Image (tube, rainbow, N blue to C red; front, side, top):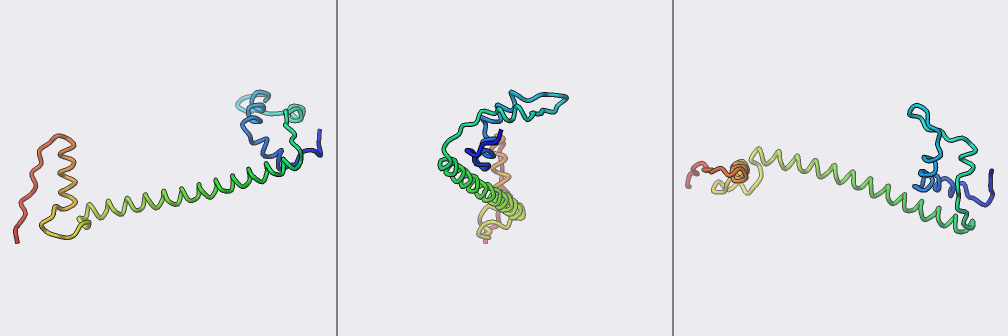
Length: 133
């Protein structure tokens, strides 16, 4: 049954809600991994009917929140990708011995990594002799 008291956008949001999904799941007909809902069941979906002005406000606010969520997800993906690339870049430089001040008296990144792994495994580590200038 069609009602002019419901905005299509409001009904669309409502059918995507947990409330509606639960109703559809409980009232769906199951046949070999496929659920279906007939038109009668769909038409009998309990639907709250706030005034049109309130429906418009709900649609505007929910739509705004969903758009903001989309932007946040896009930014998260971009930042995650950058972090992964930066991590790989730093590790590559570390294993090449390209990190640090290039002071020959300082321990190289490779030696630091060897010493750290040895300490974590409870092993003694003897660093190679460094030449004095």
